[in-house]
Length: 81
Image (tube, rainbow, N blue to C red):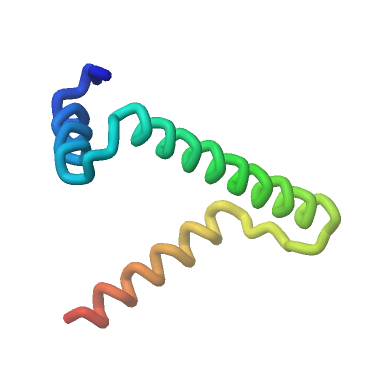
């Protein structure tokens, strides 16, 4: 199997060399994991949407959420100094 991205191709070839796992098995395992994770993410998003729609979770306005993140980032930077 050939990839158009040389860096990705090199990583795949190295993995195959290190593990002895055929590239087809590697790609199959990766795709299965990707779709499993995608389904899990979709389930989480659906659940969160239902919580918002049912009023179980209060939404935070975008500007307020951004301000909170900015304050946390600044606090972490100050703590590192």
